[in-house]
Length: 220
Picture 1: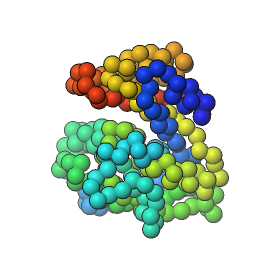
Picture 2: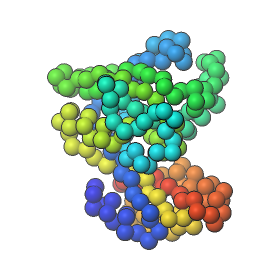
Picture 3: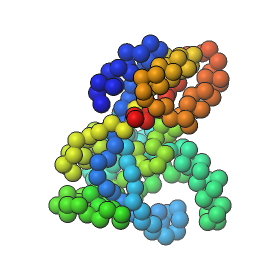
Picture 4: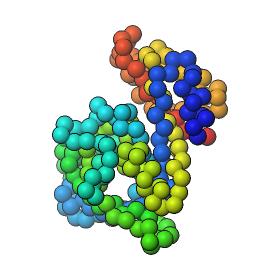
């Protein structure tokens, strides 16, 4: 919650904290003809983040600000794309996809309805077009990442308050990542192990330069 975020912001070595907002309602997606040659249907998850967290991951001439004309900008995980290229694409005899290849791809997302949970309230069902505007290390590994303002609006439409499901913690330098991680865990919060590995790699690559490291939290 907000108190946990404020507590994290006060830790020595922390530059900024970016909460991750989860979707408190079911949703599903349809599309894929352009890549897979046939229409696919699946339930999806989504999270919302502050656009400033991912500003460097947005493709040129694209934006990650808010829904416009029924189109919602979304980010996909670079790790998920790597997983597709190394595991899924060879198995289904499809070509690998570069980050540039997926930019601009659009598909339909239905809010308030899913194959697993059905339709809790038909009056709140809404369909939007999702447009991929970037590939990011900080996008959700298991779903879509949209602007936080968009997720807040979607939750409100479905009659729910937005809930933090985690946060990205940005450190003042790579050297601060270790102490900050220890302080976070001492506070009873769980640090995502995958992101911890990424942070360590960035720290080694940056040496003692000015790069900062991001640590992903899963609140517990």
